[in-house]
Length: 494
Ligand SMILES: [Zn+2]
Image (cartoon, rainbow, N blue to C red; front, side):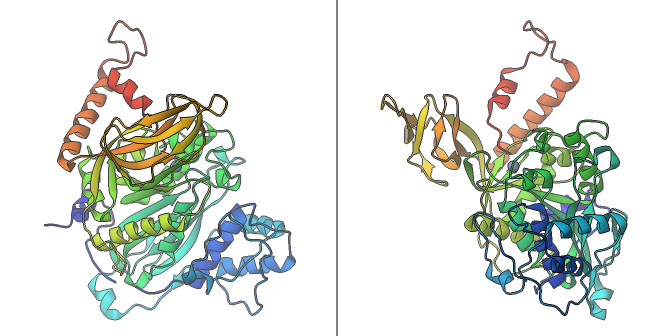
């Protein structure tokens, strides 16, 4: 069987790529840069200004040798600090003050290429076999076998609201496709940030085929405030591909889409459940798109939920632009969950290996994903939700999934499953109202069945868009079909 990704890439790939290979460790300066990014962006990581930290920040930025030992951070609290053994030994603990932040912002504005790529020696044999080329991103040339950190700057039309967004790039020694990893489009979703860090810092550019672009925190404004949204309460993931003359959210989306996302041959957008809900690690994919349907095969043993997603999400917009894209959901917002991060990293490493970009140990043994349709089960009462279920549990029709307890009357109303399936997502125990989406049940289905249904669905909605303009029946303007109402009623946590 041919490698599905080759088919995925060859259809719209400017850079070409059909090559393979193997592991090593990562440039210290990229690690430093990442700590800096996190420290700059998150208020809980920033401490009082210390003159020495300015110098350290600059050193991290330029990658130059620093004879002085970095200062010890006085406070590093991200609710649950992720003490990955592979990085703690290498990363100095930085504490970055206000002065450093300002100086950094200024110098980035003044100096285009302040992040020097790290160069590696290539074997002549490697160069001869499959040499990669220098690639240009955001007006910066990235030579083969180097990794670097760039700053995506929103255009003038949205400046004042937006902040400089770090973009990590690894350009492999050998030719191949460009995979993009984006995280924290919702600013309170932390698991994906850690996944990007772990993937990017574990790649040896010498052994990489193609390029990886990692954006750990797309919505820095939301992240710095610990919120899902932009400061104007807009959800960035409802504004892609954006409009240069639209709202702030739309302008940010548009700049990011054109300057970063359009470089991608494939894209994995990392998310978590929203608002006290949690998701088992899973892919969301529009199986009605043949290239997306091929793409999901490369992640190994992970649930794939057939869903077209909001049409203005980054995923949907990228798919429309010809970039096979999936959302990888894992866990809850506001937390860093190591078990979730581990699964996500494993899925992406499997993707890198199966697509021939990078091979390493620790990929899934089981090659095949499991496919699901899904439905939400809602509460019909208000009160305290107490769940009987855990993520990943298999349920039958009629199973009692949990109960809603009224704290005043002491009445208890059970939530009964109308479906046979698997709990792919669920609300955490909390106070709920009638209509609150509590359990997201995945219903097993054959991939081919889902593909056919999704294709039909996509065709129907395209026909709708062209033909009726919402005026085709007696219900008046804006009338929507039952299917569309159902679709809107689906709780969309992506
Ligand atoms: Zn999200």
